[in-house]
Length: 260
Image (tube, rainbow, N blue to C red):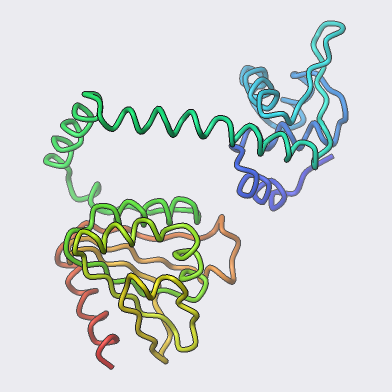
């Protein structure tokens, strides 16, 4: 059974598996019971990777290993049960990861990594100052990074869908920026429900169409291309530019719209 690409993309995005895990799991769902080799061939995944992938899926509670016979055979649990298992796996693993990361912040390792990063910034050439950011998760992860390193100003032009995402997932970054004395301004279309965002940012409604963008400290900018309400999250994309010239140009456009 050939699994449509859009199904693979949706499962990968919403369930949080990587591409190979998604392909193997969907292949197993359609086969019922199969060996690693059969699944690798059906899913188009390198055979050498299939055992590690199946072990990962087993740890996450999506796959059961049949103990009898050689070669080993695998079977999938029912999707609803699999999601419950996956939820428990993420809950248990995320607590451990969170504690490890908190501890790492105070260790000498983070200082060494920061030193490497600073030296890397000093030798960056123009191509490293411009980056294409693909997929919704990556776009918003980059936005979160920008919010966290802001020092003086954040200027956001956002659609209603973006505002909903900011309220749901990125308020902590905006709150922390506000507490550091960063001026946060957000332009939204007329009639947008700003929610909690309005408590920590100056929000202004405008009637003209919104261009999705973020400008940080008049030094770097992220411009996004797609209407998030009209395309699948897989196709969202943006361009990040670390250029004072470009950022100040976008600043002027923002100010013109702000002062209308």
